[in-house]
Length: 117
Image (cartoon, rainbow, N blue to C red):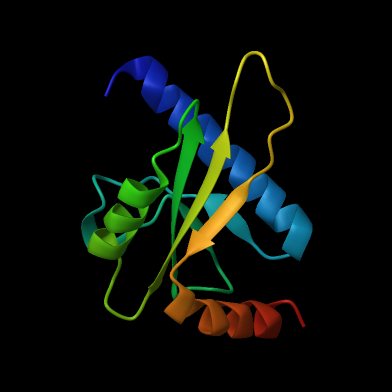
């Protein structure tokens, strides 16, 4: 991965962290992870330690491969989630999308509801 691509990824992780924190009021930050080792996700939410968040930010975010990566990199008790935003020079303002497995949706919603009370 080239420097430009890494910088874009870092920018996306920071942007998502800021937006997620603003929307939920939870403590959210970009992590300094090393090739997915030790179950470290791209973004960490202090109140939701069982969430493994993989962030993809670019012209064509690879959502399915990002989900495979999140499933592979997560700790056994964590639930994988992919946050993605399509970035285009010609179209501004694309929204962040969040993708999870259907079987994890109810548990993620339950944990999020408990955390924002």
